[in-house]
Image (cartoon, rainbow, N blue to C red; front, side, top):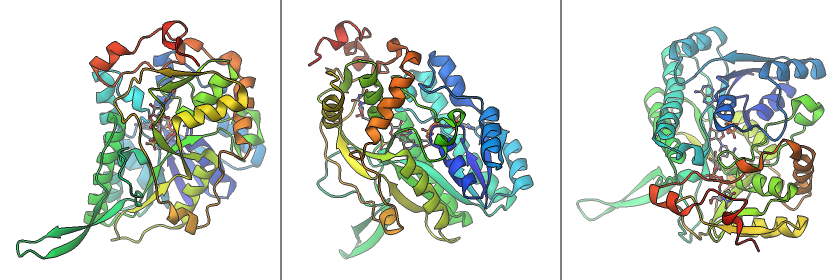
Length: 406
Ligand code: NAD
Ligand code: USQ
């Protein structure tokens, strides 16, 4: 297949591009490199030293003889350029990673809220609009989030995207309907993924676009089979307070002898998936497209759930790291249960990699190897969800904020 990987310079996009290229697909990365600019804006860098995208693709060619093409396009702003690109390249499939994906970044200020909404919603809509306008019949696979469902405890398993409901008619009968599971976003970023869902629903219904939406949990780990092939193929690894996600953050914190930064009581339960499984799920989704005219195919792309404090305790036991219970900068349920159905991927052959399988050690090793690149002052998460919460979140982690370290 000819596959466009939108956002293919990012944390999940890069290993996906390598994996698909390794399988013999013709891979085209489309990216505006905004994520690298955001690193500059925030004054941080990936824990792992990342080469330029041109250098990464050059090394891949040298190692494997396979070519990955790179195209610098801003999908949110360069609609006509992307439309032209589609006409010229006519991909069979498009994988859409190209959004601003950090919840804390999306909540930093009114400017960051505007940027996240404009970037994410425009990028998604431009892709859909251009597919219809050009008549290119590509299967669109979008990386969505488990966060569209929200994190309230309901005592039932979260289904894969849709919910059967009964509605009482005027005559008192009950009619059955299948609706998108009610959206309940917890940040501006998560809200954009809820808006994406409606765009997909409309374009599948109105224009018969073939769309798969992957409701993905938190991705952890760093290496995949292909990124291991050469040191310069190494993946991005975010550890900072805005882009670092909880499990990867705890692992790097343990490696640099920094107390594990649990928000609140750590009672938040979240869904997780290893990067290698994420890449594999995308491959499975690509091989199982919906037909034109069918509803959007939705998969829950996660393999296990964990409570934040349990993760902290597990890593503390493994590494001897201390655990700090900090004021939570986010507005979220202090404690929640989470049961998620993921039967579809399991049914299609996914054999999940779980936390127990020694991969945690591997990430700690990577973290130790590159610990010299860490700026400890960028570890704390200081982006507060409201102005009131901001007052309670102190900004001096090495001093007062970590005084409750156990
Ligand atoms: P990332 O920030 O590392 O990568 C996103 C890439 O998209 C970057 O290379 C960025 O430059 C590019 N991009 C952003 N806006 C663009 C635009 N307007 N035009 C062109 N390129 C643009 O993010 P990631 O961690 O690789 O996540 C990829 C996708 O997966 C995101 O959509 C995210 O919401 C979703 N996701 C990620 C996780 C996770 O834990 N990392 C979990 C669930 C879902
Ligand atoms: N948390 C801590 N300590 C930290 C960092 C986070 O306790 O140092 C807590 C947060 O308060 C939250 C939970 O851990 O309760 C998860 O936070 P996170 O930053 O790991 O994940 P999140 O903000 O939900 O976002 C990440 C990705 C996003 C993706 C989402 C999948 O950045 O792109 O959509 O995971 S999901 O969580 O399933 O919605």
